[in-house]
Image (cartoon, rainbow, N blue to C red; front, side):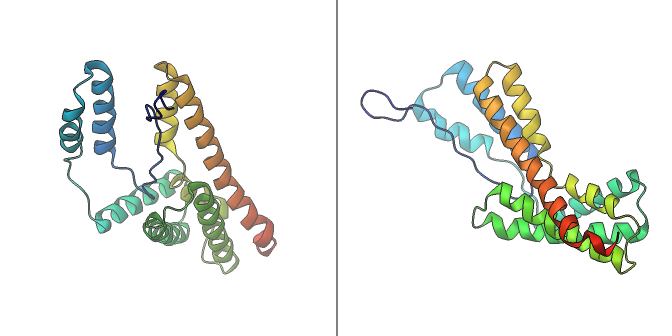
Length: 199
């Protein structure tokens, strides 16, 4: 929105973080947003407040990848996957992580990213089962889909709705729905194209 003089008074920008979300930084930025709304500090103080909120410890790429691998290994156990399934899940996890690092630099569309990642990981799972390298195709697909599901965005959308920011919450909610449908669409496409190999 702009005022009568043409100055922008509101705005929204989507910043895609790739595959990772820094939860501590997200929490501090959300807290800063609430603080600014409540206290209405002077504009000159905003840069300092933003710098203070952003002063958090980062994590190395190997550390992030290790976290994803550990999480996916745990989920494979939860879904009763075999060691063969685990190997394919971890392979797909590494590929999705590397894709996220690369595409983050060119600000790739998250919906297209989800379709491509789901399609490739689904195709690898189908090929692995066809070659006898995986036992349960759907366990691999379900576990790898967990890496793409926008859970934090879903929670934020409900929080916005419950806190009175209905428009922002609904926009975020529909974005979550589209991103989730993209994941499903990618897996369905891989099954439609290559599923006959393991039927």
